[in-house]
Image (cartoon, rainbow, N blue to C red; front, side, top):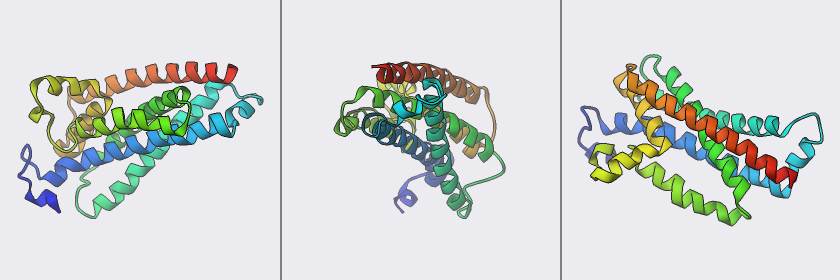
Length: 212
C-alpha cells in the first residue's frame, strides 16, 4: 500500500522497517486493554478477585496470574501476525524466537501498567485518559512509523523514557539486522527492571483495593 511510496529506511524497505514495530504495538495494545477493561470488570463489578482470595489463593498469586495471562495474550496476538507475515517473506531464520521472548516481557510490562491503571480509575470512562495520554502517543513516538533519529533533539532522547521504544529497538535489531548486540541486552534489561517495578506496584495497589 502506502509503504511502497516510502523510500528505503536505513537500507531496508518500509515493510521490513515497520513489521517489527507492528508486532510490538499489537502486543502492547492487547495486553494493556486486557489488563484494564477486563480486569476492571473483575475487580469492581464482578468482585471476582474478592471471591478468589477467600480460597487459598493470595492477592499476589491472583495479580501474577492476571499479569502472566495478559502477557500470554499479547504474545499470542503476535504469533498470529507472524504466521501471516511468513507468507510475505518477512520472517527469516530463527531470530523470531528470541524476539517473541522480548515481546512476552514487553507484554507483561504493559499488563502491569494496565493493572495499575485498573487500581486507580473509578469507571470505564476514565480508562480513556491513560489510553489517549500514554498508550497512543507511545505507539507514535517509539520508532514505530518513522526512525527516532527524525524526531527533534529533545523528543529524540525523551522517547527512550518510553518502554515501547526499547521493545521496538530490540525486536527490530533481531528481525531486520538478524544479529544480537549489546544494545539488545541493554533494552531487555531496562524492560525487565520496569517489569519488576510494575509487578510490585500492581500487587501493592490491588492488595490495598481488596483490603479496603
